[in-house]
Image (cartoon, rainbow, N blue to C red; front, side, top):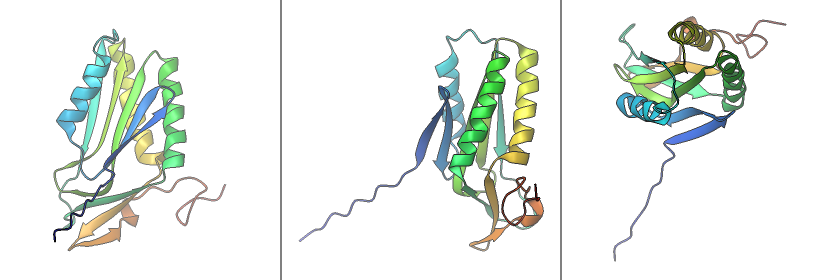
Length: 168
């Protein structure tokens, strides 16, 4: 007698924030697919500039990759604030990030700005990526010999939170 076992894994979710999308994926990001989808979604929107940023796991300190934990409620709030900032400048911001393990030379982070004006898009992508690195509630672990090791020396404290947080 044969038994069929079915396994369903949750690989992707859209978090809708103010009409735009924050995407979270389990594992590495499929960069060409995501960028193509975003481009096609906005192709008729009359934005004159589309500027993507792709973050890739680089080889350093003997790691095999990185692993990520995300606190989604704070990330959603943070992203909603950025949507408002972008909207004030006539632009939109999109973002995708990995949960879990991402190996060397794979992508864990993509963001993009769509704007009617090139200068706004260039400034906004820079501000967004820098604030993401400083403020997003995403915890990074090094993958070394099959183990997750918290990357404290490369982590940024979120003001007022956790063991790394500054007192307000």
